[in-house]
Length: 324
Image (tube, rainbow, N blue to C red; front, side, top):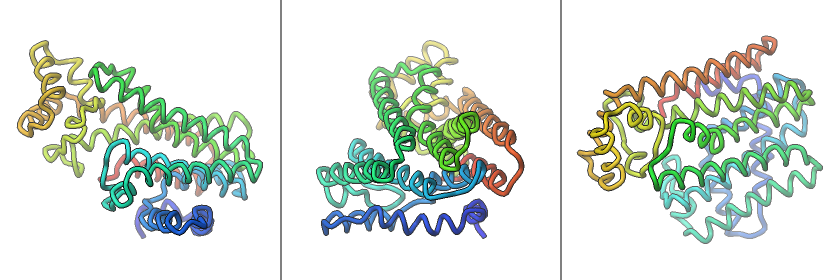
Protein backbone atom coordinates (compact mmCIF):
# COMPACT_ATOMS: atom_id res chain seq x y z
CA UNK A 1 0.00 0.00 0.00
CA UNK A 2 1.41 3.37 -1.01
CA UNK A 3 1.51 6.32 1.39
CA UNK A 4 -1.31 8.04 -0.56
CA UNK A 5 -3.46 4.88 -0.25
CA UNK A 6 -2.80 4.80 3.50
CA UNK A 7 -3.85 8.44 3.79
CA UNK A 8 -7.00 7.78 1.77
CA UNK A 9 -8.00 4.61 3.65
CA UNK A 10 -10.54 6.30 6.02
CA UNK A 11 -12.22 7.94 2.99
CA UNK A 12 -11.52 5.35 0.25
CA UNK A 13 -15.21 4.77 -0.54
CA UNK A 14 -15.93 8.50 -0.63
CA UNK A 15 -12.96 9.20 -2.91
CA UNK A 16 -14.11 6.48 -5.34
CA UNK A 17 -17.62 7.96 -5.40
CA UNK A 18 -16.18 11.47 -5.75
CA UNK A 19 -14.25 10.44 -8.84
CA UNK A 20 -17.48 9.34 -10.55
CA UNK A 21 -19.30 12.51 -9.52
CA UNK A 22 -16.41 14.70 -10.63
CA UNK A 23 -16.29 13.05 -14.07
CA UNK A 24 -20.03 13.69 -14.43
CA UNK A 25 -19.60 17.34 -13.43
CA UNK A 26 -17.09 17.86 -16.27
CA UNK A 27 -19.31 16.50 -19.05
CA UNK A 28 -20.39 18.76 -21.90
CA UNK A 29 -22.60 18.44 -24.99
CA UNK A 30 -19.88 20.10 -27.06
CA UNK A 31 -17.67 17.30 -28.51
CA UNK A 32 -14.42 19.31 -28.42
CA UNK A 33 -15.02 20.40 -24.83
CA UNK A 34 -15.94 16.86 -23.82
CA UNK A 35 -12.74 15.53 -25.39
CA UNK A 36 -10.62 18.11 -23.55
CA UNK A 37 -12.29 17.56 -20.16
CA UNK A 38 -11.84 13.79 -20.61
CA UNK A 39 -8.13 14.47 -21.17
CA UNK A 40 -8.01 16.60 -18.01
CA UNK A 41 -9.64 13.85 -15.91
CA UNK A 42 -7.29 11.22 -17.35
CA UNK A 43 -4.17 13.13 -16.28
CA UNK A 44 -5.40 14.07 -12.79
CA UNK A 45 -2.83 14.18 -9.99
CA UNK A 46 -2.97 12.74 -6.48
CA UNK A 47 -6.15 14.73 -5.70
CA UNK A 48 -4.72 16.11 -2.49
CA UNK A 49 -7.29 18.91 -2.29
CA UNK A 50 -10.34 16.63 -2.33
CA UNK A 51 -8.54 14.51 0.28
CA UNK A 52 -8.22 17.58 2.52
CA UNK A 53 -11.96 18.26 2.04
CA UNK A 54 -13.12 14.73 2.89
CA UNK A 55 -10.72 14.18 5.79
CA UNK A 56 -11.58 17.59 7.29
CA UNK A 57 -15.29 16.74 7.03
CA UNK A 58 -14.76 13.32 8.63
CA UNK A 59 -12.73 14.93 11.43
CA UNK A 60 -15.57 17.34 12.24
CA UNK A 61 -18.67 15.20 11.68
CA UNK A 62 -20.45 13.08 9.08
CA UNK A 63 -19.64 13.26 5.36
CA UNK A 64 -22.72 14.15 3.28
CA UNK A 65 -23.80 15.48 -0.10
CA UNK A 66 -22.47 18.93 0.76
CA UNK A 67 -19.01 17.41 1.22
CA UNK A 68 -19.10 15.97 -2.31
CA UNK A 69 -20.23 19.35 -3.64
CA UNK A 70 -17.39 21.08 -1.77
CA UNK A 71 -14.76 18.66 -3.14
CA UNK A 72 -16.10 18.96 -6.71
CA UNK A 73 -16.32 22.76 -6.51
CA UNK A 74 -12.76 23.07 -5.26
CA UNK A 75 -11.39 20.62 -7.83
CA UNK A 76 -13.24 22.37 -10.68
CA UNK A 77 -12.01 25.83 -9.68
CA UNK A 78 -8.49 24.56 -8.96
CA UNK A 79 -8.33 22.85 -12.37
CA UNK A 80 -9.58 26.05 -14.04
CA UNK A 81 -6.79 28.06 -12.40
CA UNK A 82 -4.18 25.49 -13.51
CA UNK A 83 -5.40 25.67 -17.13
CA UNK A 84 -5.23 29.47 -17.03
CA UNK A 85 -1.82 29.41 -15.26
CA UNK A 86 -0.35 27.32 -18.09
CA UNK A 87 -1.51 29.96 -20.57
CA UNK A 88 -0.05 32.80 -18.46
CA UNK A 89 3.25 30.92 -18.00
CA UNK A 90 3.33 29.69 -21.62
CA UNK A 91 3.90 26.22 -20.15
CA UNK A 92 3.74 23.19 -22.44
CA UNK A 93 3.80 20.51 -19.76
CA UNK A 94 1.78 19.81 -16.61
CA UNK A 95 2.69 16.69 -14.56
CA UNK A 96 4.65 15.35 -17.55
CA UNK A 97 1.56 15.58 -19.78
CA UNK A 98 1.10 18.16 -22.50
CA UNK A 99 -0.84 21.17 -21.21
CA UNK A 100 -4.19 22.15 -22.73
CA UNK A 101 -2.67 25.21 -24.40
CA UNK A 102 0.12 23.08 -25.90
CA UNK A 103 -2.39 20.71 -27.52
CA UNK A 104 -5.29 23.04 -28.33
CA UNK A 105 -3.72 26.54 -28.24
CA UNK A 106 -4.26 29.46 -25.86
CA UNK A 107 -7.73 30.61 -26.98
CA UNK A 108 -9.26 27.18 -26.40
CA UNK A 109 -7.39 26.75 -23.10
CA UNK A 110 -8.75 30.05 -21.75
CA UNK A 111 -12.30 29.08 -22.76
CA UNK A 112 -11.93 25.63 -21.16
CA UNK A 113 -10.78 27.29 -17.94
CA UNK A 114 -13.80 29.59 -18.10
CA UNK A 115 -16.08 26.59 -18.67
CA UNK A 116 -14.70 24.76 -15.62
CA UNK A 117 -15.11 27.90 -13.53
CA UNK A 118 -18.74 28.26 -14.65
CA UNK A 119 -19.47 24.57 -13.91
CA UNK A 120 -18.31 25.09 -10.34
CA UNK A 121 -20.34 28.26 -9.88
CA UNK A 122 -23.50 26.70 -11.36
CA UNK A 123 -23.13 23.55 -9.27
CA UNK A 124 -23.08 25.64 -6.09
CA UNK A 125 -26.07 27.74 -7.13
CA UNK A 126 -28.15 24.75 -8.30
CA UNK A 127 -27.61 23.07 -4.91
CA UNK A 128 -28.11 26.27 -2.88
CA UNK A 129 -24.61 25.95 -1.42
CA UNK A 130 -24.00 29.68 -1.16
CA UNK A 131 -21.70 29.49 1.87
CA UNK A 132 -19.47 27.00 0.04
CA UNK A 133 -19.42 29.36 -2.92
CA UNK A 134 -18.38 32.23 -0.64
CA UNK A 135 -15.55 30.23 0.94
CA UNK A 136 -14.13 29.03 -2.38
CA UNK A 137 -14.69 32.26 -4.32
CA UNK A 138 -12.80 34.13 -1.61
CA UNK A 139 -9.88 31.71 -2.09
CA UNK A 140 -9.89 32.22 -5.87
CA UNK A 141 -9.83 36.00 -5.35
CA UNK A 142 -6.86 35.64 -3.00
CA UNK A 143 -5.05 33.36 -5.45
CA UNK A 144 -5.43 35.92 -8.25
CA UNK A 145 -4.24 38.76 -6.02
CA UNK A 146 -1.26 36.71 -4.87
CA UNK A 147 -0.17 35.89 -8.42
CA UNK A 148 -0.50 39.53 -9.50
CA UNK A 149 1.44 40.73 -6.44
CA UNK A 150 4.20 38.25 -7.26
CA UNK A 151 4.33 39.45 -10.89
CA UNK A 152 4.50 43.09 -9.78
CA UNK A 153 7.30 42.46 -7.28
CA UNK A 154 9.23 40.13 -9.61
CA UNK A 155 9.70 42.97 -12.11
CA UNK A 156 11.46 45.07 -9.45
CA UNK A 157 13.10 42.18 -7.51
CA UNK A 158 12.20 43.94 -4.26
CA UNK A 159 10.34 41.19 -2.42
CA UNK A 160 10.92 41.23 1.34
CA UNK A 161 10.33 38.20 3.54
CA UNK A 162 7.04 39.70 4.76
CA UNK A 163 5.81 40.25 1.19
CA UNK A 164 6.88 36.72 0.24
CA UNK A 165 4.75 35.26 3.03
CA UNK A 166 1.81 37.43 1.93
CA UNK A 167 2.19 36.11 -1.63
CA UNK A 168 2.32 32.42 -0.71
CA UNK A 169 -0.51 32.78 1.80
CA UNK A 170 -2.69 34.18 -0.97
CA UNK A 171 -1.61 32.13 -3.98
CA UNK A 172 -1.24 28.69 -2.33
CA UNK A 173 -2.34 28.54 1.30
CA UNK A 174 -5.72 30.19 0.67
CA UNK A 175 -7.00 27.25 -1.40
CA UNK A 176 -5.87 24.54 1.04
CA UNK A 177 -7.39 26.62 3.82
CA UNK A 178 -10.66 26.72 1.82
CA UNK A 179 -10.52 22.92 1.38
CA UNK A 180 -10.32 22.38 5.12
CA UNK A 181 -12.93 25.01 6.04
CA UNK A 182 -15.40 23.82 3.39
CA UNK A 183 -14.93 20.24 4.58
CA UNK A 184 -15.67 21.31 8.15
CA UNK A 185 -18.67 23.38 7.02
CA UNK A 186 -20.06 20.42 5.04
CA UNK A 187 -20.03 18.36 8.26
CA UNK A 188 -22.02 21.10 10.04
CA UNK A 189 -19.10 22.19 12.23
CA UNK A 190 -19.59 25.33 14.33
CA UNK A 191 -17.74 28.58 13.57
CA UNK A 192 -14.98 27.91 16.12
CA UNK A 193 -14.21 24.51 14.60
CA UNK A 194 -14.31 25.99 11.09
CA UNK A 195 -11.82 28.67 12.17
CA UNK A 196 -9.45 26.00 13.49
CA UNK A 197 -9.66 24.05 10.24
CA UNK A 198 -9.16 27.25 8.24
CA UNK A 199 -5.99 28.02 10.24
CA UNK A 200 -4.82 24.41 9.92
CA UNK A 201 -5.19 24.51 6.12
CA UNK A 202 -3.36 27.82 5.90
CA UNK A 203 -0.38 26.48 7.90
CA UNK A 204 -0.22 23.36 5.69
CA UNK A 205 -0.42 25.51 2.55
CA UNK A 206 2.44 27.76 3.71
CA UNK A 207 4.64 24.72 4.39
CA UNK A 208 3.60 23.18 1.06
CA UNK A 209 4.69 26.25 -0.95
CA UNK A 210 8.00 26.63 0.88
CA UNK A 211 8.68 22.97 0.07
CA UNK A 212 7.93 23.70 -3.60
CA UNK A 213 10.34 26.65 -3.52
CA UNK A 214 13.06 24.51 -1.95
CA UNK A 215 12.88 22.07 -4.88
CA UNK A 216 14.56 24.69 -7.07
CA UNK A 217 17.66 24.36 -4.91
CA UNK A 218 17.32 20.74 -3.78
CA UNK A 219 15.89 18.86 -6.76
CA UNK A 220 15.00 15.29 -5.90
CA UNK A 221 15.56 16.13 -2.25
CA UNK A 222 19.33 16.40 -2.80
CA UNK A 223 21.26 19.63 -2.44
CA UNK A 224 23.68 19.81 -5.34
CA UNK A 225 21.21 18.76 -8.03
CA UNK A 226 19.19 21.99 -8.30
CA UNK A 227 17.12 23.11 -11.28
CA UNK A 228 17.40 26.91 -11.05
CA UNK A 229 14.04 27.31 -12.82
CA UNK A 230 12.76 29.93 -10.35
CA UNK A 231 15.92 31.97 -10.81
CA UNK A 232 15.63 31.80 -14.61
CA UNK A 233 12.02 32.98 -14.27
CA UNK A 234 13.19 35.77 -11.91
CA UNK A 235 11.04 34.43 -9.06
CA UNK A 236 12.11 35.60 -5.61
CA UNK A 237 11.55 32.74 -3.17
CA UNK A 238 12.46 32.45 0.51
CA UNK A 239 15.95 30.86 0.16
CA UNK A 240 17.04 33.66 -2.22
CA UNK A 241 15.32 36.43 -0.22
CA UNK A 242 17.11 35.33 2.98
CA UNK A 243 20.46 35.15 1.15
CA UNK A 244 20.05 38.66 -0.30
CA UNK A 245 19.05 40.11 3.08
CA UNK A 246 22.21 38.69 4.68
CA UNK A 247 24.75 39.12 1.84
CA UNK A 248 27.28 41.94 1.73
CA UNK A 249 26.68 44.77 -0.74
CA UNK A 250 28.92 43.47 -3.54
CA UNK A 251 27.50 39.92 -3.40
CA UNK A 252 23.97 41.27 -3.25
CA UNK A 253 24.60 43.52 -6.27
CA UNK A 254 26.09 40.61 -8.23
CA UNK A 255 23.19 38.24 -7.37
CA UNK A 256 20.53 40.82 -8.29
CA UNK A 257 22.35 41.63 -11.54
CA UNK A 258 22.51 37.92 -12.40
CA UNK A 259 18.82 37.34 -11.74
CA UNK A 260 17.82 40.50 -13.64
CA UNK A 261 20.11 40.30 -16.66
CA UNK A 262 21.87 36.91 -16.80
CA UNK A 263 19.20 34.44 -15.67
CA UNK A 264 19.84 32.24 -18.73
CA UNK A 265 23.56 31.95 -18.02
CA UNK A 266 23.79 28.46 -16.50
CA UNK A 267 27.18 29.08 -14.92
CA UNK A 268 26.06 32.27 -13.18
CA UNK A 269 22.76 30.68 -12.06
CA UNK A 270 24.77 27.80 -10.56
CA UNK A 271 26.90 30.36 -8.69
CA UNK A 272 23.74 32.03 -7.34
CA UNK A 273 22.52 28.63 -6.13
CA UNK A 274 25.88 28.06 -4.42
CA UNK A 275 25.53 31.48 -2.74
CA UNK A 276 22.07 30.50 -1.48
CA UNK A 277 23.28 27.16 -0.12
CA UNK A 278 26.42 28.61 1.48
CA UNK A 279 24.54 31.66 2.78
CA UNK A 280 22.10 29.55 4.82
CA UNK A 281 19.06 30.18 2.62
CA UNK A 282 18.17 26.49 2.40
CA UNK A 283 18.51 25.93 6.14
CA UNK A 284 16.44 29.02 6.96
CA UNK A 285 13.62 28.14 4.55
CA UNK A 286 13.59 24.57 5.88
CA UNK A 287 13.27 25.88 9.45
CA UNK A 288 10.31 28.07 8.43
CA UNK A 289 8.66 25.15 6.63
CA UNK A 290 9.07 22.95 9.72
CA UNK A 291 7.60 25.70 11.92
CA UNK A 292 4.46 25.79 9.75
CA UNK A 293 4.27 22.00 9.84
CA UNK A 294 4.44 22.06 13.65
CA UNK A 295 1.76 24.76 13.77
CA UNK A 296 -0.53 22.62 11.58
CA UNK A 297 0.03 19.50 13.71
CA UNK A 298 -0.59 21.48 16.92
CA UNK A 299 -3.98 22.68 15.58
CA UNK A 300 -4.80 19.15 14.43
CA UNK A 301 -4.06 17.75 17.89
CA UNK A 302 -6.66 20.10 19.36
CA UNK A 303 -9.19 17.61 17.90
CA UNK A 304 -9.87 14.21 19.41
CA UNK A 305 -7.81 11.32 18.06
CA UNK A 306 -9.49 9.50 15.17
CA UNK A 307 -8.68 7.77 11.89
CA UNK A 308 -9.38 11.05 10.10
CA UNK A 309 -6.99 12.99 12.36
CA UNK A 310 -4.25 10.38 11.87
CA UNK A 311 -4.78 10.48 8.09
CA UNK A 312 -4.62 14.30 8.05
CA UNK A 313 -1.37 14.19 10.01
CA UNK A 314 -0.01 11.70 7.47
CA UNK A 315 -1.16 14.03 4.69
CA UNK A 316 0.61 17.01 6.29
CA UNK A 317 3.84 15.02 6.56
CA UNK A 318 3.43 13.73 3.01
CA UNK A 319 3.21 17.28 1.63
CA UNK A 320 6.47 18.17 3.41
CA UNK A 321 8.43 14.97 2.80
CA UNK A 322 7.46 14.49 -0.88
CA UNK A 323 10.28 14.20 -3.40
CA UNK A 324 8.53 16.09 -6.21
